[in-house]
View 1 (cartoon, chains in turn cyan, orange):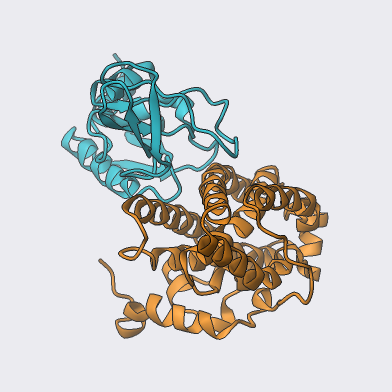
View 2 (tube, chains in turn red, purple):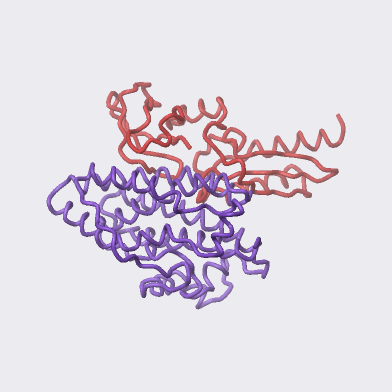
Length: 163
Length: 251
């Protein structure tokens, strides 16, 4: 393996360990927050993108990423925040969706109703799988989540909003 | 034209987002129910996040070393270019919701159009903000219907709120000469073109809410030129306190 390929692999493995501080089961790779990782000589260039404009986790993710790279013995790196193209829940990996459900958060449903003025998405309960759920509040514990309740098992749960 | 006109244009959009974001944050601890506390806090967070991205870009356009904090915390009221609508005090819950409806119904299509602008940075910021504005409009719209079509008291308050805020809606569609040039260059959005959609959204919501559309009359303007109501100064005094007392303080 060339030196550059080895460095890239090491940097990628380090970045994949960085998790969302609010949803610690999801790495920034699962989330689609990591947009690019390139090696230029002996330097690493990482591009990340925010989920929501005001997401307070972004700064934390940037700090954790820098710490993870340093822990992997990488000192020369640059972390850049890119806004375009805008992040979308479509970038959540299948693995990420599975992890979300296991964590008790319903993953984003289809994109169809994203811009509808009224009505909520049809969301399956992450605990019992029932589609008999209702929205309690459009805005939940973080910018990316809404609050739902299952009418079958009666459990409240977070729903990762379509974005 | 170029950067000279683009700076105040970007700054004005940033000021709109920051001032409204701060206004909404004033509800924290006072909202009628916990879910609303979270909702208004989340919306404020979206707006302040949008403001940060816009200020950061404005800072590079100006090129005088004033960063996002300097632009937000070290300018006085007459240097702020926000719309008068967003600086109006929160009033009761109905007034806050009415302000959100009137503004979000404009801002959602505005971001959608700006996302197609011939300016990469503004388009990128707009593409993100458009998704957020869609939620803001839905949240406020659903509340306006509940208030208008609710009790006698909530209906009266919602109607009073609309009547009070209506004279501030005209400013959203006004354009000065500098912005006109940016519109011609395909960089800025022509707000007049958004008017039919705004009218449609608002008229539909008011009908569902059994509220009456106020009559268009005298429209207040001046925010975009730095002429503000007395309310902005009070808002800034609170928001800028720390940076005024301890200039350059960092966390």
